[in-house]
Length: 330
Ligand SMILES: CC(C)(COP(=O)(O)OP(=O)(O)OC[C@H]1O[C@@H](n2cnc3c(N)ncnc32)[C@H](O)[C@@H]1OP(=O)(O)O)[C@@H](O)C(=O)NCCC(=O)NCCS
Image (cartoon, rainbow, N blue to C red):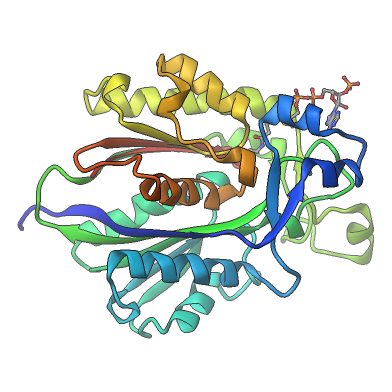
């Protein structure tokens, strides 16, 4: 078999129009713009319209990625949607999106839940399936409407999250040395209770009472998540660099999960890289979970911050607690 590199052929992103500023939040809960900026680096986030579901956000991002790649929907044979806020518990958002985009019925379509690490988990999955030779072109999307699972009366969580979508079209190249160099995925399953939506699943199906208690909203132990996030992102970054005999200084751009500027700062210090080497847009979008990295990736490409030959490091963590890193050469 000839060498198969898996390469990102195009990217796209979409953020809903409505902007919710820290000022706006301070009229909803007891907080302030100053506190939110100091503790998280976030200034504003986007909120989807009531009639906009995750597949609608995904649709716009996917269309832009297909256009950027110069690939027709008819060429896609694999659709992976990373999300924790699917349109419905079933069927998958990937099937809904397939139909919206006019992707052939012979394409495999499924959702993947790795929370905020979803795009990196999806990248690993899609690239492995492409490298197997069984698929030719994949559409990978991270899309979230987190605003519908955020408790807007909980000041400890509502400041962090927002809505959005990012997409990548991935294909195969016989040019060696480009594309996905490697990934490093993992999960700390013992820490599921630090960040979860307790109600609405098979453990505690939704009832009128659970709804009243707000069990369908995100519950988070912010301080504990913060500490673990820094630890696992450092490990994931260090391991993948070591595995591929790369020094942090050889990385052109780091695209971290956009959860909190202080977490990104901590990773920068650990890798001994200036913060300028990191792509940061958490100030404008907050944490959009699985959409966070692909939105940042698309904006970084558009801003000319990724050049041919560059190596990019993606690194994320999320509920699970999942974590992951990936190295890409362009
Ligand atoms: C949520 C987060 C910003 C809170 O920051 P923190 O520095 O840990 O703050 P704490 O939770 O310790 O709270 C400190 C104080 O501020 C208060 N506070 C919490 N939220 C507040 C808000 N929005 N506005 C004002 N005060 C707030 C707390 O009540 C607490 O007061 P106390 O000391 O009187 O009890 C931070 O923990 C965080 O970002 N964690 C990681 C979360 C994350 O990334 N989740 C997504 C994973 S993918």
